[in-house]
Image (cartoon, rainbow, N blue to C red; front, side):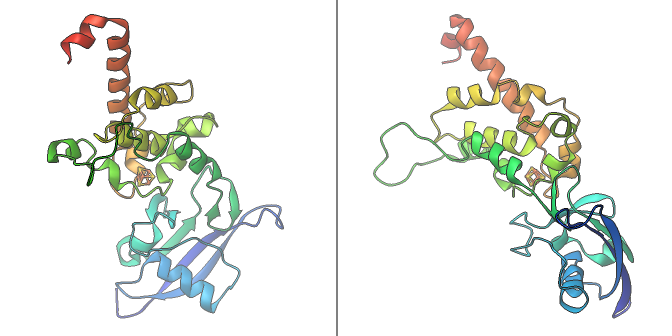
Length: 248
Ligand code: SF4
């Protein structure tokens, strides 16, 4: 890429409140080797069309707000360099999600399901004088699961979410694992009861779309498998007392 190159940026435009159908609109923007897709969207917003709608916040790939479908793949607009994906860029909102306007999708169902799994540590022991201490080994059990930025890319990519509106989905289940495996948490039984429901972890068919879609290179499918294992172990322990005694 030269110092400044002309790039074609095609955006899927929608406004369900005013327009009967979405349409593609192409803009010309200038990009250097460091221009991100988010920068290009800002160029359009600031110099060509003030009505363009998109979400963003941190610009550092940690808030998850700017997850979009860019050149046929799930990416964060803020960390996607145009120089790495070509001169013809096509940007669409996260697929299979209700569109509010342009690149902004309705994330209500995604966050409602997140709330269901109680995304916080619940200790039932009396609090220690200072802090809850976690050993490196205990911390390693939740490694990577804490890196989820709740961008909803995995949720948007999951065929079980497309076909089952009540299914909790990969991100909520990954978070369920994250809190169930946390050494400071004491409500494992309650957590397993929630995720073992008809719309919980057993609805995951291990398609791995979530793992491929995750822009943070996480593996939600693996965390769901871990949770399935924990759930099976706890069920067996409850039904076969001998197992409970031998695992103490
Ligand atoms: S698991 Fe990955 S794709 Fe899913 S919400 Fe978290 S960061 Fe986004």
